[in-house]
Length: 149
Length: 473
Image 1 (spheres, chains in turn brown, yellow):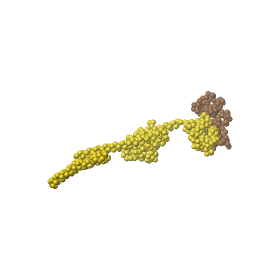
Image 2 (tube, chains in turn blue, yellow):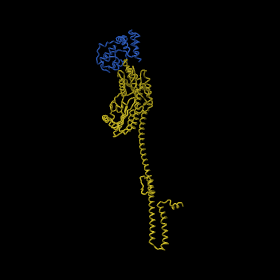
Image 3 (tube, helix red, strand yellow):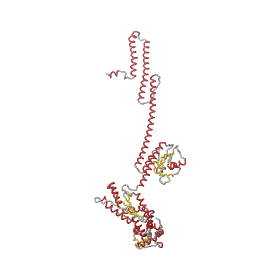
Image 4 (cartoon, chains in turn brown, green):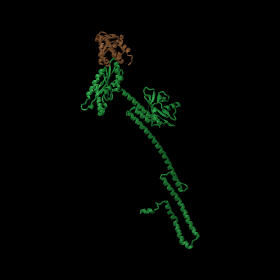
């Protein structure tokens, strides 16, 4: 719970710092989160205060995560099979490439260290992350993970 | 002196002897006097005259006849006396011969009447005796039934297992109304039919397979209108239903009583037999009804006990959460984790060799150890984590927001703590260690059941690898 609060603040504050949203918008989004739950990024998008691209680009600019537009990217099925569908869905990530012992992930929230640790534990690889929008990742998951778990 | 007088007295003599004395006094002495007079005065003077001889002979003859008459009377009297003695000794079937209308005859008659009356009274007494023993038998039967009822009630109050109570109640019901079988039809929640839950007597195996739909004609009134079903020589069903009954229960006569609880028929208690010309009595119905009420109480008790069990969230011994709670809570935490794209970890700890520890040091020491472990566990986790005792020697932790690596750290820390807390330098048998399996959502599944199964699997690996360790993969 402590970690989540830090993360929420991180993304919310990041967008606030970068002047993409106002304090009032952030407060409103946090209010919605308290009421209905959900992720702050998705709430801000739902409320129309930001675009998904804004979030991805802010993460890129702030932390140096490279941005990957997933829509035009083809992933090898062998690579997606490294991570089970339930893990990809829950953490909203897609493995896109593997070179040697390096696995590349596209994530909507590359700040989710625990998710990265889980993938490392699962694959035995060291992980490098790209940022993508939530919708792109969801589409990719639908495309590559047909199984319903 | 007195004895001598007694011997001389006539009082102790029988009537016959007295008669002889009387005869001697009345006849022989006068005759002797006559003989003396005849021999002294008449014979010397007149010689042996024919008429004297005749007169004397006639006198002797008449005296003898008198004796015969008297003897006859006394013989009869003594016969009456003998008979009376026999009757007094208890042979009341005797009847005296009443041939004469004299006093002896009357006496016999009176004696006969008396014996008759006595005989009548005796017969009446005998009839009463028989009736009393019948009543006694009935009372015995009722006492037997009541003691059976008492047995069932005491099982209920001792909170015996529900199935055992039903079994015994059905067994005891079979002892009623000459029954060859007894059965309990029961409707499980969410089922549309009644099936035999318990049965006793002949053909149990067949009975246990009987299932009757809620709206089937045979038991429709019992199931839906809370009515009795009586089947005997006076209460007949139509032929189709009788045939249906015979197939299902293999019996001709049956008494079935609904078990009514909270406005619904939950079950039916029945007894059956195959006797011809059989009739159920009011007593049979009343007694079986009491048994059905007992079963209703047992069912109600069981329902309430289950409800309480469901409401309980804590383990009584350690104060940690119980298995029910932990499973439910884990499911909730997983749901939350999925929404917030977070992990949620689950650990199962099992105490190594705890059975032998309990055997060696006893139940109380084992409970003390369990409590101590519970405290150590509770002190090793954060506010949002949940600790539970999920089996006799098994503990579980829910760690929201923690992934497998983080959970492994927690598990290792607890394992070490327990290891050092329970290391005894004097007696290594007192050492207690834990093995653990760590699972996580999403890595090992998206349902509580999946995480529990995985954690148990890993726990087995830990045990197989030598215990006192944590396994995560």
